[in-house]
Image (cartoon, rainbow, N blue to C red; front, side):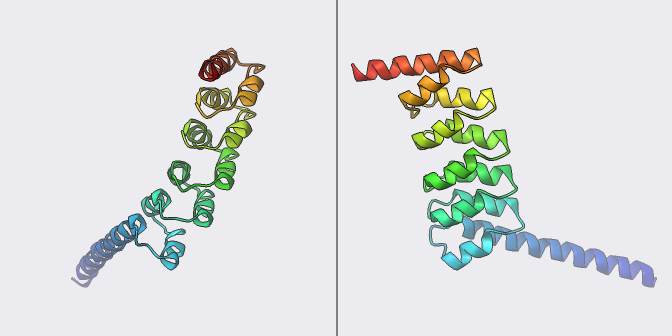
Length: 173
């Protein structure tokens, strides 16, 4: 009888702890998304155990560049992509994401419409033809970068770079 009671109590405690953890995580998630979040709260949530909370924090446009820079080193692809698409992300952080080991993260940076041209120039030298192709397609890619991509080893990258240069020429006429 004692054994059954012990297992019953352990199960109740486990369920209760899970409910408390979910409630805390939900509260932290709402805080991470809040426009009223305070710097000390940001610092506490940057290393939160929940990927969902860190992703929500990375999406928060009220974050300053130093916090986004820290989140750009997160182990989670989702968190880094959220940083890459945050309108408050600065050039320094974009550069950090542009050299990430994860091609999915670099691809999002290369496609993002608000990424600075100098970051696109950096990504134009990426080993992945897929990343270079995204750079050639990005409307923010400047002429010198597109000219560099005209000499790319991948024929698709060359073709899209040529189209981009043609578009720039037409815009200037």
